[in-house]
Amino acid sequence: MNPKRKQRLIIVLFIVIGVGAAVGLTMFALSQNINLFYSPTQIAGGEAPKHTRIRAGGMVVDGSVIRDPNSLNVTFDVTDYEKNVTIQYDGILPDLFREGQGIVAQGELDENNVLQASEVLAKHDENYM
Image (cartoon, rainbow, N blue to C red; front, side, top):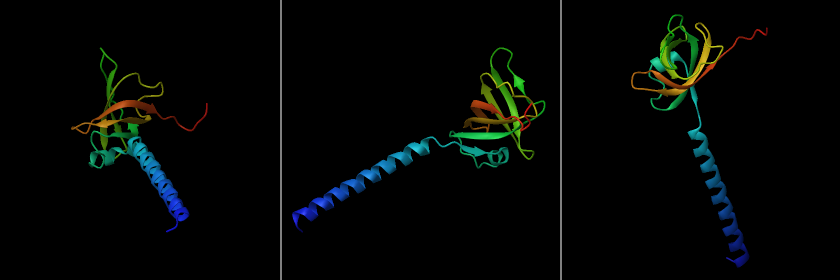
């Protein structure tokens, strides 16, 4: 093989290896930041992974909100009208949060299938007032 062809082959190999490494690192970084959404039925059915950050959403069950009077800890149930999931959150809830309202919570499932939320987002309806 002549030297010029050998040099081109080496350059092409370095480019291919560099692009492969960049794609691999990008895919690894993106896989760490994915938050999959699960409904209460999927969580109750065991489809959601434990100790992995997920999002769960549904309607807050009427009469299920329990506030700790000495802290910001709140426990409530969310439903998709088939199954319920209990969510525990320690923090200030959004202004739009109330019973019968749609919410999305982000957190991790514990051993008892209770979502330990790190963030709660309240959904609003489409009506502009």
